[in-house]
Length: 135
Image (cartoon, rainbow, N blue to C red; front, side, top):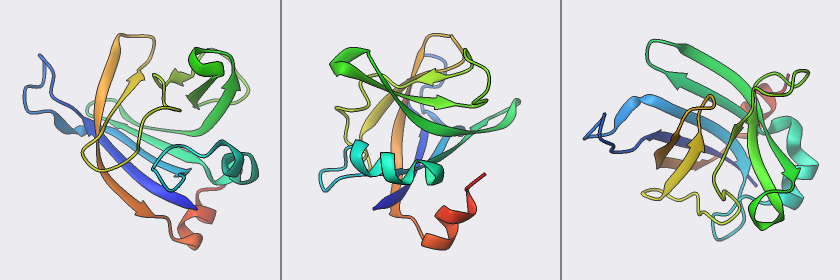
């Protein structure tokens, strides 16, 4: 099933309290344990959308992709411009992490150092909403 996941920037030296002004909204399939579901993603990849919101930089919209290689044999990435390689953001071992409220996820943002995000919400995606994200 598809879920709508919201991530906010977690505590860091720059943001001791974290920040809801920086983060992601992701529509993705999760298994019963809250892990990304590669098999379901293959069937529903057109609905696996990402919105990155970043204070002062606006929003970016992309897709969740799964590529061979990397730690554990595969890498989950966010691709903002499918026709141009190099603009992707890689998740750190996303295949191992649980997408459950309170958990932490690391994403390499814009070729900078990795940032840690806290999962603040995981909700079942409404079918019309998930389909509306199709491009």
